Structure formats: C-alpha cells, structure tokens
Length: 422
Image (tube, rainbow, N blue to C red):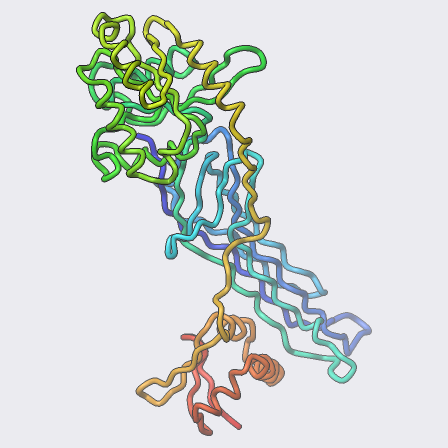
C-alpha cells in the first residue's frame, strides 16, 4: 500500500522553570541569590530524507513531543536544554495546518530541514532579579510552553516526466523497459495501484526521473477509480508523456478522456507540455489505425510518435524528445523554506474578558495566559511582577472599565483564580 497522506500532532518541549536558591557556604552567612535559569524546551524539526519514499511511518506514529527543558538548579546552574525531535519525511512533502489548510512548508530539497515548532523559553532564576535595593529576591519565573499544532502531510512525487494514459496503455511496461524500476505488470485494469519512479539514464550526461502515474478513467477528477489519490502526483512533473494504446478500438477518444480529466482536475495539469506516443505499434491493429490517428492529431497541432514498449521500438527516440523538451523549459525555482517556525501567535489584543453567570470574571487569550503560566504567585514579589505585566498589556484598565469590584473573583485562563483588590 502506498501511503501519501498523514495527519500528525506535534508538541515542542516546555521551557524549564527558574530556581529560587541562596548560597549556603561556610563563612558566608548571608549568601546572595543563586537560583539558575531553566533550560530551553526542545524543538520539533522536519527534515527531508531522500531514502524515505512514503508516509507509511506515520500510520502508527502520530504523536511527536520534544523533551522539556530541565529546571534551574542551585549555584547558578542552568537546567539542561530539552532534546529536539527530528521527523524524517520524503522529498515532495507538503505540510499544512490541519485546522486552516494553510500551506506551511513545501519540502522538496533533500538538504532541507525546518523547525516547525519552537521549544518554550526558559524561566529565570532568582539570581536574575537581584538589584541594589533587593539583594535577596525570592522571585523566579516558570518556563513558557512549547508550540504545538496538528499537521496534515501530503506527498507529491517529484519527477521530471510523468506517464499518463488509460489503464493498460503500457506505462508500466515503458518504465520497466527504460529504467531499473520493477513495477507490477499484468493485463488487467489498475495493475499499477501505486506510483512508480525510475531514473532514465540515456548517456553519461543525460538522465531524468520518470514516474508511472496509475491509469486514469473517465470521471477520475470526481474521485472515480483511483481519482484524486493520484492525479495530484502529476502536479510535480514538468513534461507529460501521454501514452495511447494503438490496439484499442478508438485511441483518439481515449486521448480526449485523459485530457478532459486533467483539465477538470485543474492545478495547471492541462497546461503541461505533452508528448503523445501511440504504443503497441508492433501489433497489426495499431499499425492499421496509425495513419488515421496521426492525421487527426496533426490537425490539432500535435506531432505524435509511435513506440512499442515491449519490443523497445522508438523508446529511445521518445526519451530524447522528452529530454529536449525539459531543456527548453524554464529551470524550476528552488523551494525557499523559512528558517524559523511558521506557527504564529494569535493576533489581537492578547486577551478577551467575559463575565460568567456566577459573577466571576474570566480573562482568556494566549498572551495573558502565558504571562500567568510564567509567574508562580507564591510571593508578593511575583504578584507585583504579574500585576505590572498585565497592566502593561492593558488587562487591568480593561477590567476596571468592564466594572470589576473589590473582592470579585478573576480567572486567568482555566487554572489561575485571583481576588480583585484595588
């Protein structure tokens, strides 16, 4: 089975918490603060492994979590950074946000790797908060959470030339005859259930990758037959070799069916340059029909050719023609992938204020909840620091404008319950 789609959930590691500690050494009765910072959370990284050719690994591996950073220690020791998680994907993998469908990455180059989720930043130890007026702070901050997201992965084969045609047109036979690929070949529809890739080596300086795309049937753009599962693989190819079975009753009608399916599917498939080749020219039926086929295609401005994939007749000339067409086309632009994660924080003021039926106030939003998560509320210093941070964010003024009163309960997110005091 060929697995070319998958959905995974990724979670970067949380930053380690800062430590509250003081020097306790002989002859140093009033040692200063010595709490160290936490470690950075591990990142989640996607990298392109040219050896991998399907997404089958993700059939049983759907959750990926990087390590959390260690907490800070005494003696100003920083916690250990969390280990990154590296996820190997095949070349040609499209990465999308599962919720919005937004394309986050197009991973084609085998050298590409991308940080798709950043680990949380570390909390600060109390040594960081020492000042000339507060030489023994008991305040430290927690590490921030790592980014997380659900991703849709979609594999599109990367090939220079794609073979298209109805089932049994001879695509697999041509691929096997001209490359080292060993596709399954038999005389029944849909022998090819998975795309096959092969490297065509014409001479020392001329080679390209050719893909045998499973046969299409009328209605494929609507999902009939193998339909959408494989039409998308043609999107990556630069040139199409359109094979017609010359021994069939009406090859010209077959030609119309395939082109109609490509046009209906869209994505620029109908605009791709085509080389039309009538296969099985070694058979009497194909030889008898060839003059009529050639004339009809010439009237459409198409210079078709004949081959026999089984007898290797005309195949080399066909492949050199494909090479010449590839050389005349513009060189594909390299895929540019952002070095930093593409996961974005929510836009807006950073918080939303609502009032519950029990008259409690609820402040939600990524920015304010991260602030609450980073403060410990275990000392007056921490409470003052949190108050200063949310005041800067505008939460305090917004609550006053909304009508908060002395003694009201204020929730920050779902985990932090505070009492309002002016």
